[in-house]
Image (cartoon, rainbow, N blue to C red; front, top):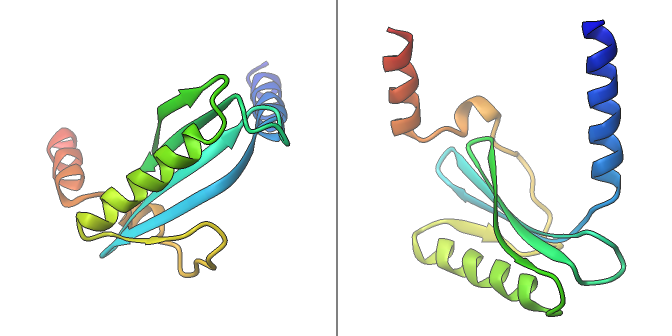
Length: 121
């Protein structure tokens, strides 16, 4: 029964992922850390509705959404990537080739690793 549930969940996740489309994607790096800022379109090729997602240390947040304003999500994503650059991060522009992705184990911030260590003790 547990195996069946896992198969159903994986299938649903795959179907949901195939209904959205990410076009504008910024990969930002600082040392061994990586952040991803991307615009996700719910009904491609339509530019709305859309949302801006932010991936940090394996956690994904939706920062902004737009139901009917074309260009809103793209502008917010670009501005947020520029803000990250101002904080010392290097953000690859959409379409720029990104190599040597940071492994998930190295992606955590030092404070995050310290918290995990304390929780294990």
